[in-house]
Image 1 (tube, rainbow, N blue to C red):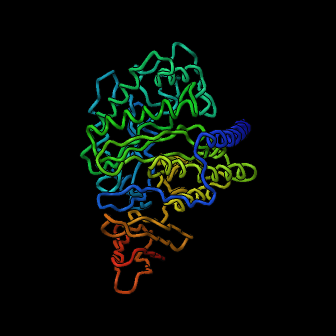
Image 2 (image 1 turned 60 degrees about the horizontal axis):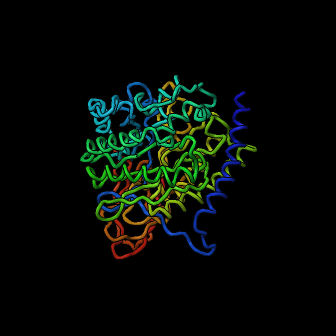
Image 3 (image 1 turned 135 degrees about the vertical axis):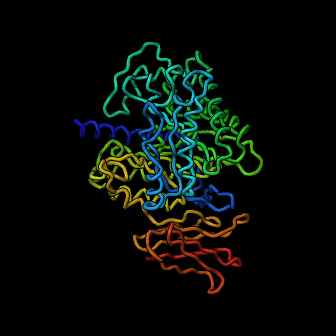
Amino acid sequence: MRARNALGRITLTAALAGALAAGAAAALPARPAHAAPEPLRTIVDDRGRTLILHGLNTASSAKGPSGLPWIDREDVVREARELGTNSVRYLIQWKNIEPEPGRYDDAYLDDVAERVAWYREQGMHVILDMHQDIYGPAACEGSGNGAPAWATHTDGLPCTPQTPWVLTYVQPAVIRAYDHFWNNSGEHPELKQRFTAMWRHVAERFANDPAVLGYDLYNEPFGGTSQFGFFEGPVLTPFYQGIVDAVREVDRDGWIFVEPQALGPNEGAETSLGTIRDPRPGEPRLVFAPHFYPGGVDIGGSYDGFTELLVKAQFFLWKRNMPAAARRLGMPMWLGEVGGMPAGAPGADRFTGEWLRMADDLGIGWAYWSNDPGEGGVVDGDGDPTLFAELLARPYPRAVAGTPTEISYDGTALKVGWRARSGASGPTEIWFPTDSPKVTSTDPDGTWKHRWDAERNVLSVWADPGSPAHTVTVTP
C-alpha cells in the first residue's frame, strides 16, 4: 500500500513540476541563453562576512501541545561539537504565542528565549520559524499544527487525516480554513491582521537578542482554493510585505526569510512570488528560503531506479529555478528544509550527498529536516548517530571574508575560494572535523596566516589584503 501511494505521489509530482515550470516561465522575462547568471546576494554577519548556514530544523516535536522541542542544553552542545552546525531553524507556533485573540503568552516566549540562549552559548545563529502544516490542529482532528483554534474556521466541513499525510491538505475543512485565513472567502480579513500583529510582538521580543539572526515568516504556504499565480503574486506577496513592514517597526536589522508556496517550488517548479520591499535603511535584509522535497523521497521512498530518474529531473529544475527566483527578487537564498528520507532507504546516502553538493555549488546554506530522534534524524531512537550524522558533519566555510566563488569537498579535501569585498573584515572561518588539518593558499607566502581552534574544530584564515581573490585548500 505504501509503495502504491508513493508511486502515485511521484507521478503527480513529476507532472506538476513540468507543467508548473512551463506555465510559470511564460509569466517571467526570458533569460538570454548567452548571459552568465548574476551572483547571488549573500547573508552577512556584523563584520560583513558571508554566512554559510548549516543547521537542523528543531524540531518536529515542537508541533505538540507545548510548542517546544525535545532538546536540552547538552543536545545543543553535542550538535555544535559533532556536526559543526552554526545555525538552527527553530520552530515556534502561533497557537502557543497567541492562545486567545490579542493575548500573547509571554511565558511561552520566555521558554523559547531560554532555548535560544543555549544556541547563543555555542555561537550559533537562530532563525525563528513560524511553523504550520495542514493549517492547525483544529482544522483536522489528529493532524496539523500552527494556527490556534480561534483562528480556524472550517464551516463544519469534514476532515479525515490521510496517508501519506500531505493528502490531508485537500480535505474540505482544511481548504476552507486556509481560504478564510487568506481571506479568499472575504469573511475573515482579521486573521491575517492578527497574524501580522503577532509577528510584530515576537520580533519586538527578540530584536535585541544577538543569537537571533532573523525570522522565517510562514512555513510552506498553501493557498487553499487559490494556487500558483493566483496565490503567490496577489495574495502571498502583499501578506509578506505587511509583516515585513510590521517587523521593521521594532527590528531594523534582523534578516527576514520568505518562502514560496510549497506545492511546485518544493519540487523545483518556478515561483511567481513578487517583489517585496525592505523599508530598513541601507541594504535590504530579505532572504528567499525555498524548501526541497522531490516527490518520492519525501514520503519514505527510495533514490534508485525510476524514482532516481524523476528526482534527478527535480534536482535540475530546483537548481535552475530557485536561484533564478532569488536573483529576480534581489535576495540571498537559503535552503530552509531538505531531507525526509529514512537512513535505511535505498540511495539515502547518494540523495543526501547530491543535495549537499548542490548547496555547495550554489554557495548557500541549509537546515536539515530534522533533529528529532528516529530513522530520518541524525540520531536514532536510542540516541546513536545515524548515517545522516556522518554525512552532515561536512567541512564547510562558516563565515567568508568576501564573496564566495567556490565551495567544493571531495570527501577528503575542502577547497574554498572567495573574492575580497568592501566592508568585509575578519578571518574566513572553516569548520573541519579533524585534528590539526593542513592548509594551503594561493596567496603568496608571508602575506596570509591561519590559526586552528582545536576545541571548536574551526580554522581561521586571514588572507593577503593586497590580493583580490583567494583560494584555500584544507586536508586532514
